[in-house]
Length: 410
Image (cartoon, rainbow, N blue to C red; front, top):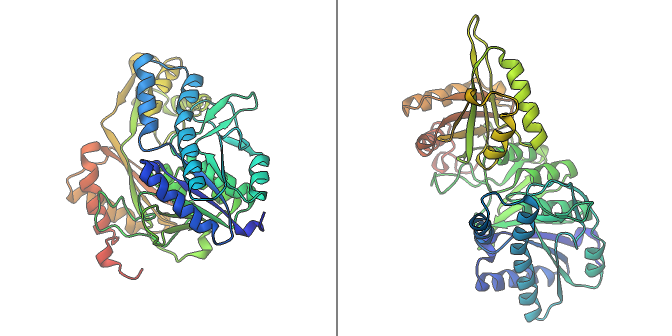
């Protein structure tokens, strides 16, 4: 095997592998890198919307599929992709071998459907690289210490890719997707959004956690902890994308981007006489399920009862509601699904009151009354109605000076 700085770990998403023709294009691109004398590990997602179709199929035969069996089913998608890509590479005259997550040594905890990687024991991968082969790894999946197949949750292939790059101390880590990099906003919603040349780990982690789908937030967390530079770029062009890296390697900026999350719900507990105690009990219950709260709103008005609100991901609602019913009287629990979050992210936002003022003025001009606002040192998140999201983001992007026409050369 070549020296580690000659090792490239690449990940190709579902849209990049959606058809046999695209799989052949990916094979050609991988071989181009191999011809430069580099060792290659390729992490793949399932083809196109395969994972969604498998999940819907599970729901047809079961209203509540057992999580273990769901993992067994969903991991089939990546196995199809890895074997087809290996075949396509072999057809072009290069040796390739495909491995499942468990065969690759991706060891996880025991949490089915959203497991966390706890170790990478990639001995077989290293052996095959030493033989000059291109190694194809099924992303999104691993194996628990009890030898159970597990999955890493939505976007888990990103995490597989970064974890392998960290384990091998790879020279390059590239995430290929259907967009050209990380933008100041979703370019499908904001045509004037700019592509960033670079973004810090902290900023990207916040954007990802707040809804930006370009990278899974756990993959960014691993990249930050192991100092893995991640190059996010398009599968369909050779243009440079966005590098996620240490803050000291990039220029400073007030605001790095705006993102939205439409896949959230708000759980409210009405008439809480002790909102802090209720909040503590809710968070403790969610912790047992490994369900993070995206927003927590709790207050106590003198002499009055208050409402406690928790914002979580929509796909975790039923599990959370069942657990919370054990802690909180069900008649006091209400769920709002017609909500979304909008988050503005940038280092040092807490030191720039102008940003908060501009956000509030922009929302007011749009006729939008926030349901809740949360701020931190690096972000400001607004809870609003789903119907408000597109107009709010477009106006905020302009009012905060992020439009491409105003920021040429930045």
